[in-house]
Length: 247
Image 1 (cartoon, rainbow, N blue to C red):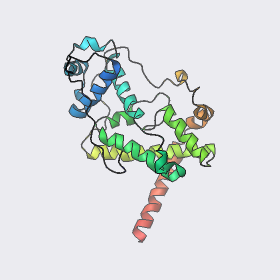
Image 2 (cartoon, rainbow, N blue to C red):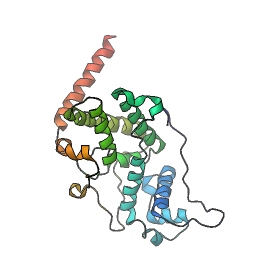
Image 3 (tube, helix red, strand yellow):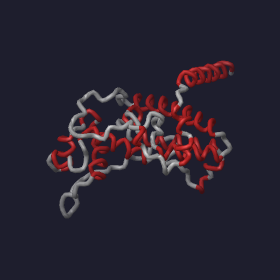
Image 4 (spheres, helix red, strand yellow):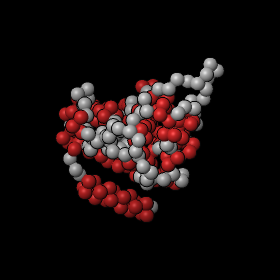
């Protein structure tokens, strides 16, 4: 990972190995869908086009994914899982909370800039629960985030507030960055059809038993502070502009 640039994109292709075409799996289909979107864009992704890239019939894909909607959810999940939550011990970045947040911010940015055509999906598709905020939309990531801040001395309420502020910053900044690279940040307008997709945003079905910090702070995470967040962010911006023009 880089601290400000972009790593060379990893090419994950389903090209035929020497012994013949690679057998299909959900993992292979998702990897190839990511490569397809990187190359062709999100609107070009159809089950038929992806099947052609894999050298199979479109119906073969339905054994592993429940249509395009389910495939897009899997693509988003795959990219979110690439976010490195815990910095390496030998870099000393976990020693203070500033270093931790800087590491995590750059980790998310690297994923966004490696896959700019996909990041708007990470940012805009409904997460598995209304209180999970893109782009840190994984319970695994939120558990690590809150636990780390609490270990650094923040109260639980403060850790949740930092989660809100931090995700708002990442979302706005990185959507601007990918838009500046010519990517559309508008919702996908093509039909999302094709199967019995596992529709997200089913909070009551989300299993958080393995994530004790998230389970304990779920009610705080669910509170709506959007108006106050907007006002504080605006005030912070005005304060920063005051400092800039006072120099």
